[in-house]
Length: 370
Image (cartoon, rainbow, N blue to C red):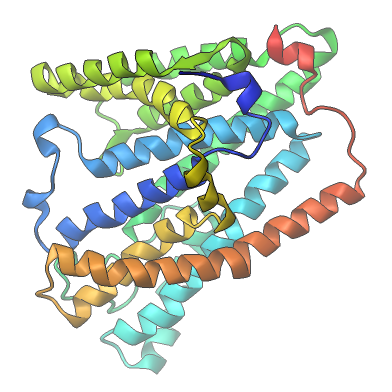
């Protein structure tokens, strides 16, 4: 079976919500190992790659693909950035408030009045809500002091500043193309190829620059822009399930024969496999889209909830932590989506409609397909 990517992308009948939800759940599961003091038992390290790293890679490829689509559908750079702000910040700020004033107050070793008087809780809100201009702050005063993974309230946030910076870079590319599009001189795909090649060189020349102790900054950028390049070239791409079997076989052979090179094979493999599964359109699974997009909420609430459960029961097992944390995190993700994220997105869409936007997007169609 083949998937015509250009014909599939205009509709909303895809499995991206499910893919990202499963990736976020995988991150929750993998964090159960180091958080319970059993990091050595984490699976899949035999191939020099963890399930957590795989999940992060899926997130960045998916984000690059979808956000590039958002850029091309936007009528202006302002609309593009507004959409990114509305998608990231309302849910994030709410999660940070939850960490500070619910989790922090319940699990600090300090008296409540002393905890609330400490400046660190307000710098935590500022740094972790802006994501730019400051380093992330992982500690709150007296919170989780005696956990196996001490003093870290929400370690999952490390990917978000990098993703926001990638949005800014992609938006700048879009702004430049909007100016150049009058002459139809430089299509998006050409610019993205140059960007991808640049980050590929950075990966090979500077592999030691590590962000989050899992991927280099260049690798995360490469995953994101490869995903964007796939969207930009969608009119030339036919995804074939038979080729996918070859891709998977190549990953297995690499893992068995040269595990240190698996990450280099992983990037082009996921660029092929993620859109293939997203647009494979298994009809029963499309029903998941009616539930909501809970992946972001699962990702940003899982870590503090897991740490809280361990603070209550330090001897909890990996399985026990996952089984207790998942329903709590899912409930918080559902509240976040239906109470915060979705209303914010609806408000943004209503404002966009009032502007009476016309046209196909930020770059004229000929600029996309050349």
